[in-house]
Image (cartoon, rainbow, N blue to C red; front, side, top):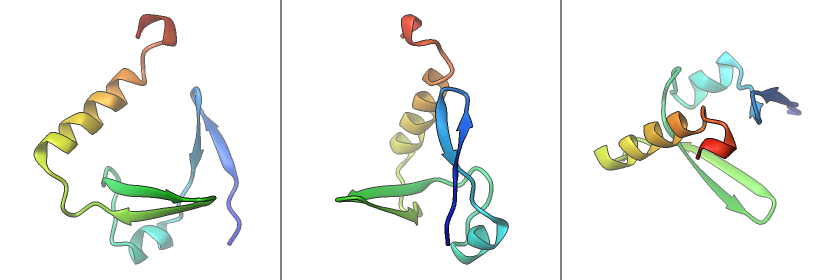
Length: 71
């Protein structure tokens, strides 16, 4: 399957189809773990995430909304 990265603000995004979400048992807002092995990106559901990891993720997402000169 080929997918194209799309511009999303100052970032690029990979759009996942509803079918992929279903196969991975994900829903909008789900957390995932990503690992890089050479040039391979692996994405898995983050079912064992601690509360502090969730807070870090939310804080990071919030900070991404600020312009670089304000960080």
